[in-house]
Amino acid sequence: MLIGRSTRLRALERADLVNVVGWFNDPDVRALIARSSPLSLAEEERWFEAQLKSTTEAVFLIETLPTPRAPARALGVCGLNRIDWKNRSGVVGIVIGAAADRGRGHGTDAMGCLVDHAVFDLGLHRVELEVYADNAPARRSYARLGFVEEGVRRQATFKGGVFKDNVVMSVLAPEWRARSPRSAPSSSSSSSSSSSSSPSPPPAVAARARSRRPRR
Image (cartoon, rainbow, N blue to C red; front, side, top):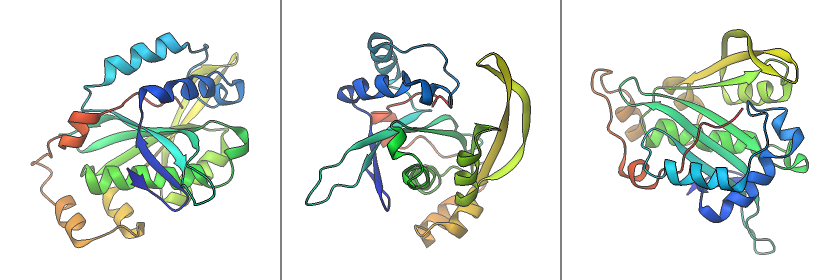
């Protein structure tokens, strides 16, 4: 489990799929992600079964931190996909399900946990994402975390009857280590190894991957 300031990430389980389907069938959520068609529970279950053995993708359920007065509550999902172990890179994505939970810092906190995991636990050097150019709140959130806008894929996605620009953003391991409170000598030494020596998938990724390409 990955613990942040206000959220925690855990591996997605079969029992979580009903929540995920509900989130991705919300029109407000679908307006922010690549998927346009409704999602069925049967489709989600097939995806879940197909991805159990993946070593290049991992998806997590985002929860609030439990307190003595309130148990953990599901907020959304985030994931790391297209992990390239040779080049030590990966792509991240995130969805906060309920409108009431957006704009409260949960997404920023959860994404910070995810990038910490990518850099410190998996040894990735480059973490990237794409976001719609008109999604100003998300772009601000990623920029606060240290993601740099690299360029625009012009009219790359056809959505709602119009072509939308996708902004490519990334953060590199040295940049992330300089910002993250999790920085430690052991993390620096592992990340500074030669680029010709690529890390192998950690056992936790190989054994418990719960993955998808997060739908922006």
